[in-house]
Image (cartoon, rainbow, N blue to C red; front, side, top):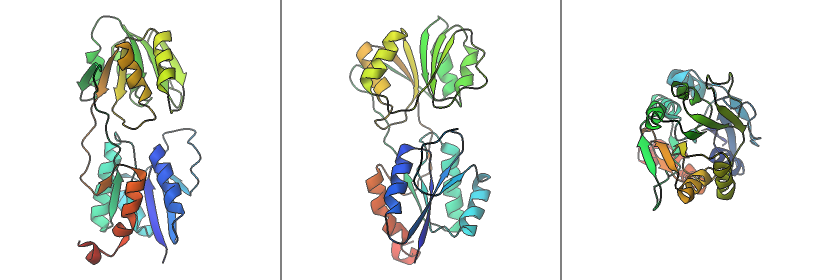
Length: 255
């Protein structure tokens, strides 16, 4: 019997998980991408791109596609997608697993200012002009138009278009991983005195956090949103080990 598994992706771990599960016998993997990245990395399994139309649309897709297991391997800040996934799984009675990357924790020497969202991050920069490294992607960068007194270095995978209404902004296109040594050189080159970051977790983008610590630079850290309570794992290997149990009939899983 072939098991059809839908992975909601967009992260490095989602791609790794898809490749790992694709090697399982009798498994058909589909990786779903939101379509926000213009040039996604090659995935190696069949891809579905674009939204579903909320929990309702996802529930319909799960039934029509004959999906046996739903895996949420989206970014820690994709709270809406995670909520829709949990709701759609509940409505359809399908098992769901989530890959939940551990958050970074402050270490000795870190100068973190914790904020709840990007709007609070803008306010946390203060009124005095600063040299700010925005490492939050392009989706929410527009919020910083409310603080045009700062100089910005804005890094994203895809171009920020249209350009922001900021008098002093440098745009940097790059895709991680970002080693600490390279991040330190970047911060020093641009004289950065504040880094704005989301607590993405993982090693690929931690370099800027370690570099800021070494240089004594403040990091304005946007807290993670609350995510649904579903069966989860912290690593690709841990989650892959849960798949067989999740695919067991509900009675055998004790549901």
